[in-house]
Length: 36
Image (cartoon, helix red, strand yellow):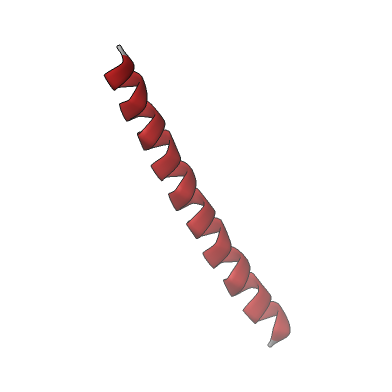
């Protein structure tokens, strides 16, 4: 049981990490377009 939970938790962490990176990239692009 614990193994499955650990696996799903790590998957969630990875997806959150990726989502945050995507958001950061989008924000950077938006800021650069606003500045220019």
